[in-house]
Length: 93
Image (cartoon, rainbow, N blue to C red; front, top):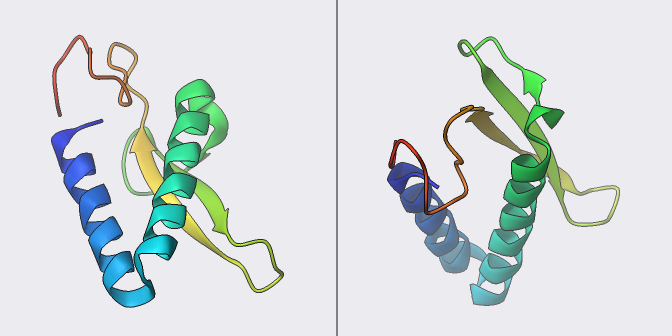
């Protein structure tokens, strides 16, 4: 995962903990990481966007009720770079 993505995830954790508490932040980050694993295993699962070349979006739901809401993860597929691995061929981006 890129340094920027790690920083963003850290910000999401602290922001969620500040607003909803540490337990909710832990659950939320866990759901996000599960989504990242799905994207790692099935990178083509996302939908195309108008945000740029090769930018995809993946929607994941938070909560299990009909009032649950979704969040969007925007990402790019890099053929020679594993976004979720510490050992990439290009380094952090």
